[in-house]
Image 1 (cartoon, rainbow, N blue to C red):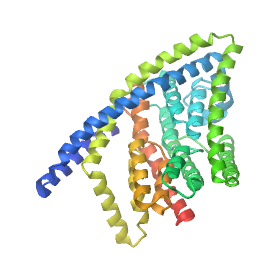
Image 2 (image 1 turned 180 degrees about the horizontal axis):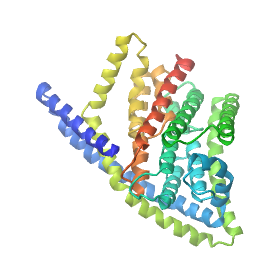
Image 3 (image 1 turned 60 degrees about the horizontal axis):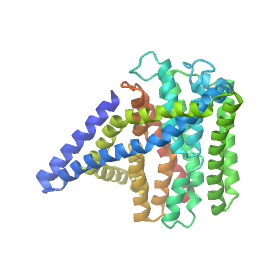
Image 4 (image 1 turned 120 degrees about the vertical axis):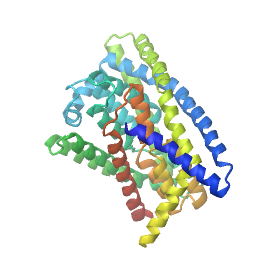
Length: 410
């Protein structure tokens, strides 16, 4: 229901602004630009879905091999103490626990192509447990928030963009991104737990969250000892080694269980095509709404208004110039990426605005894209508190990013 109102608002606000521009300022280009955006956004949505087909087929095939080989069940048992508290409505030891872990691990390593099909697999398994098929369950919402908070340990793509745009130290945003995304994820867990009345004040969760903080601190310290070139090489190499290890490990587990690995892969891969086709209309809807909103100039007006309000208070408004990336990130990953590149191009890759845009890009994920794809893949219409929890986690990430960038670069 919330997504319905937001989608309607995109079009109505865009139309009103375009009409005002035409009537009072004689801007005859705004309506053609809006219509062009509908066609280009529709094409982009289809191309994204088409591009996902092969990747979905690959990873759903691999997951099917792992499922039949017993790997997913092993992961479920290992993670059961933590996940039974974060996802109390999922039966203890259910295979979906392993799928959730694999998705989160892929996101943390920045392996977006692997994370999406793994997430869709987890969502399908949770839908099997869902008693109201058109309404998001509590586990679905917690899982969505963990994805939208965007916990990333290795932001390789952002560092590559910085290198291409002439940053003296492309990796100088690594630690700020790691800190900002950690706070975003922690806030998402706490906020969703409050909504769902999940008790986090128990020995298991306190040890887990405390251990996670220690691991993050260790990773920060370890990478800070490396040169920028070594950091890029190590992070990229580790990510790819882990990915290939997962694939080979699943295959070996299948062989050990005497599973016909090839047939199991084909069985899972078939689901990839049907899933990719199923998400096309949901993706077209959300991307067209975003495209019209941008083309009307509504985003530029929003940023201008924010800058004016901040300057009235006398507070340093330097961070406002990076806000297009933060505001676009929940709506569109590619749009936010474009905003980030634009900020580095106009202000400089090593400017405060350029660096803050990079941290915004890495601190959260595309809330509405994930909502449309994940919930759309299983036919969820009533999202309940998913949007509010996801956006509050995003807000925590934005606030943390601003504070951390002033600490590191201000």
